[in-house]
Image (cartoon, rainbow, N blue to C red; front, side, top):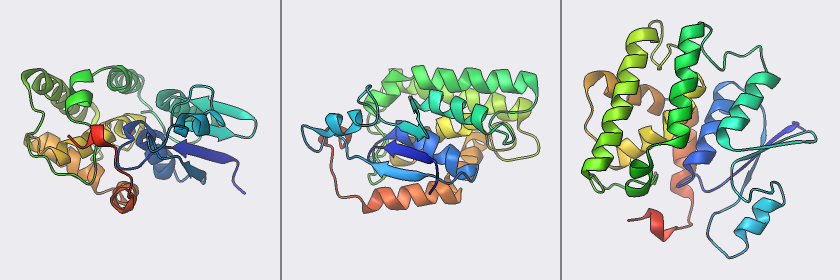
Length: 218
């Protein structure tokens, strides 16, 4: 039995869960998966607290170690499996990758609130306010600059897939759901992420879920 277990929420809605899940899949780590549907009953948080005192997903269990928060999980995995290229090898590229991952982790609140992740839905341009467009413009700038500076040799932000791509994967799904208009470089990057077998696996599983969270359905 694998020593790694990842506790996640609904695949249709839980953008935070997608990030470490996708990274672990991309780097071919074997892990058990525990899915706890969010908001489906009053005790869902208690179920999560069986694994983490935070009461939130995702949670990584590794032997006797518990790690929560998507960025902390990815950093822990990078330390635990240093033979895998979780971050770019080049120091400057690695600094940028960490910076944009942290920015994604802590920012873009207007996009999150007005365009929640929902893999099953199609809401063309719904929720597109001026402040949301500002978030979108910033993300496009990040994608363009990363690809221009460090994207040679591959189709991801830093050429090969890294944690940074895992952190922007939920944005890719949002842009599909809300039919966000993109430039050629950003569209090509989006399609590369979307084409990953692991992303398709996640999307297919999300579409087969039956739970509905009203606040994410607009």
